[in-house]
Length: 366
Ligand code: F6R
Image (cartoon, rainbow, N blue to C red; front, side, top):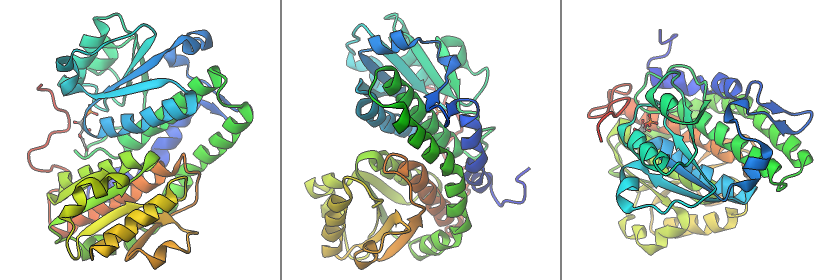
């Protein structure tokens, strides 16, 4: 059932190619520049009336939601808050009219997420669930459901459910932006063309996985690992660190790259691996200066960069490449590199990859 792969996790990383394709099927029209989300059951008029989006999620799904916040605000101009579910109920949230709650949970069974959803629904706030599991508890509680259609995920570490959650958040944010007149159908056509290329580009990354494996093996015995990203790739830095700690038991932390100098830089030592997502975009130059700060402490920079970037090699010790895409879509590619890095690090350390110690696939206690 692992279809020739050594672990479910590796199989599921590869399945992202078809999973993202399935998530998109029937939802986007490249020709017309439109997005069709029947399951959402909201008219354009209702979307225009929204004043706020409140995202609720835990763990990896929370990382997807964090990118969602950037997308809803930047593309659709809707104020968006995001909370960790286990905190939400206890901080006396203020819920304003016109709020849409979006609960993200691959299993649909996470107790903290269900509790947060019950809390917000008690204020009559309409709630949309994003989940992978048909018939899961969340699907019976939320007002509407969008399925990621990633297929069953067996590995405890979420991979294809994460990238398909991101895919849905992209098209949801673009749909909201269209309804609110923030993006033109022409822009959306270009966006959909880019999005449709993503599965093939993930395949290209998978074809070069040996380079990631070699890098993982070289640093498999590091004591600490850091992950830096900015803007759209900040949530991906957090996700890269979480994947690594979950399955390789290495100490790893993700930071917003600009935050490094406000404290975490004190932890850098000679040779500490610092994975820095440095794909092209508005913060590229800032990321380059972050890389220089890291190098000045004799730490080792592993950069994730576009394959056309000829500059990055001057600063980084190791460069892991992704095919070129828009800045907006780059997280869907950079995350695959980080998933592979976590996988091959755990493999080199002889860890139990599909069933890491102390973790369960769905966490049904609060
Ligand atoms: C990470 C992981 C966990 C889950 C979290 C939420 O690989 O699997 O962090 O993301 O427990 O789970 P769901 O999405 O099922 O609510």
